[in-house]
Image (cartoon, rainbow, N blue to C red; front, side):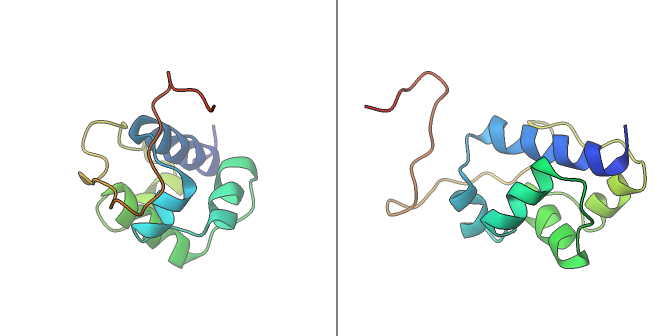
Length: 102
């Protein structure tokens, strides 16, 4: 697996594990919704700014995303990844996997 694919999978797993929406990621200083889609669904190159945003929002040490691109194994979701965060009342609600849209 390429470093780019590993980073995409790590980001996707982290978002899923935290039940965050794309808006939640943006609100906490992560990449834009367009860039998040790019991360998860393409192999296009990522800017240094995007890598910094990924490190910040996932609670990784600075430079971790770049290291993953270079072949380092990403931190596991739910381990040392991600800050503890509770959305503000006006933020998009988080969803549980068992909930359904009515």
